[in-house]
Length: 398
Image (cartoon, rainbow, N blue to C red; front, side, top):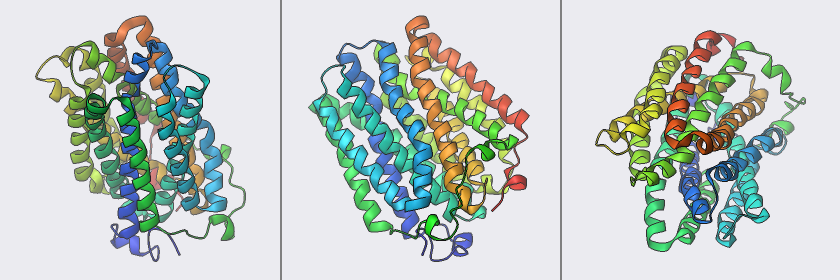
């Protein structure tokens, strides 16, 4: 018995069912937890940490997520995605509560960030592996677009809610709300999904290895494009609150407009990803993303700040769904957990560089130049897509 469908053929004609709906809800709530803590740099700033230290503290979350992802990919094969997701929620809940204990930079702070990153890693490894295995190849673009809607909605609303919570209740209110979102995600998991027989107990587990997957040229260039996209996205996520505060502006408005735009784009583009060329969509989306980042410093004061957010959100929405749909197209069914573990680990690696490298750059060239340089860096993703000759439909092994 599978988690998302009574039989695999059902997913060809029907995407929405109870498990898929509740998995979307889980993603929404887990990324609400993440989106609330996008404001954690404000707490770190209040503790007296400089921008470089803030970059490392935020980045260690993703470092832990990347290093643990291969382990969770194999664990999903042996124990099943449901157990891996459950473990991730447990760790995320414990970490979210533990932020209440931190008042200064300390080993405890780094430990909590590591635990939170590992928990997030387990959730992503389990949920994205489940989607790649269970969703029909004919519906992957639509499926990851809807998952993208859930994620973008959470991150779009959460920072604004977080700003209100901090204003009313301080940072403790922010942390308690983050913990509550994980509890609700756990409830959604229990109600909506049920454990399935792990691949390792179905006779399919033959010791999947990661290195042979990386030798696929098209997949390798997809990963290069992915890390550039994630780095650019992470720079905005981690440092927008600081540049907004520097200019007496609200980061919540940018997050809301950009992620609302991404939601609309994802709803509209899901079917197109399955019908039309994914390479074409990648190349079309990167200029929107780049321009949206470059314009942030010069528009953050003005009324056209929303236009900048719309550009960024358009690029982000198309690139998120297209990268995920392409990644899910690689590998056989038994290789899906490994493929998605590699892909999501590389995605998280971009969030490491987007926090750590961007934090270092901000310390040396300032926040304004950080966003301008990051926007130009995003154009490299366009070059990766052009030179990669991505053609997952031709190369994938369903």
